[in-house]
Image (cartoon, rainbow, N blue to C red; front, side, top):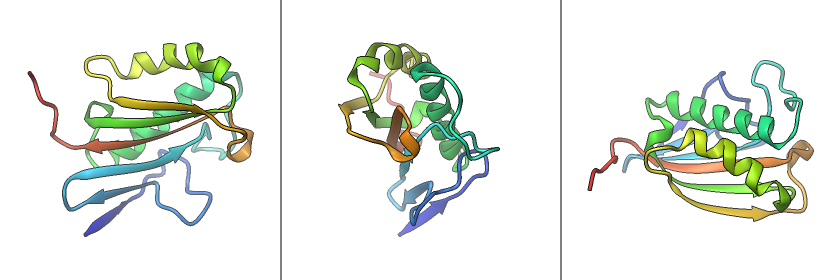
Length: 132
């Protein structure tokens, strides 16, 4: 069983997909977010730092719509238009994932929707914050 996650605090889906899905097992799959301002539907101004921040705020909004947070994220995939942006992206990313960063994959891609510089998706599991 699955439940669709919808929020107006993140950009509306620009295709036939959901912003996120919660499974009956408690996993949350957030669709890839690009740096669209949810109020305008337009790409945010600026470079990779500004775009990374907007993407992470969008993911945060999707998770919060289902009573989760970035602390619940266990895996992300980062898609960069230019791998040369890795260090700048990483600086912003590190501000959002501080105590126990999730597992991550980062790849360079030829092109992203709306010519964005970055896209990130994630998998979260509510209440699975373990302390070892």
